[in-house]
Length: 132
Ligand code: THU
Image (cartoon, helix red, strand yellow):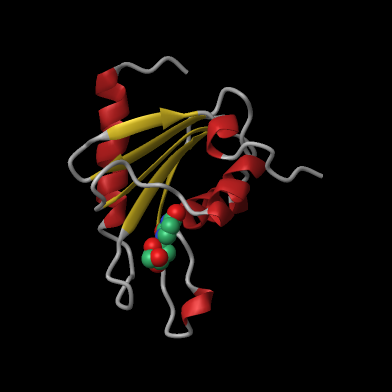
């Protein structure tokens, strides 16, 4: 996938829109994500919390599980945003779940509401991650 800055910001903006759907009444910390699969299909996700806090689901995993349930098997690109000072840093669990569907070419965009962004590879995001 060839990405110019305009395209990167388009995905950041789509993740910002997806974040609006977050259900985060407990932490008040909304996160949005969008992924593009091997067929060019886009799927968004947001964090969905639960009164039993440990059952809450992160935005990245919401997007990945929704997409995988519909047949996605390769993440070409994933963008994640939150209202953070710099580009958001995904949690360890989400890094491992992204890895399940990523390859060396997967583009990972970390962003925030100010449209600051950072592009990372899977290896940079989760070096020596678990693999079966
Ligand atoms: N959260 C995400 O959605 N993604 C991450 O990578 C880190 C954390 C959510 C989980 C919880 O709803 C809120 O942010 C605060 O931890």
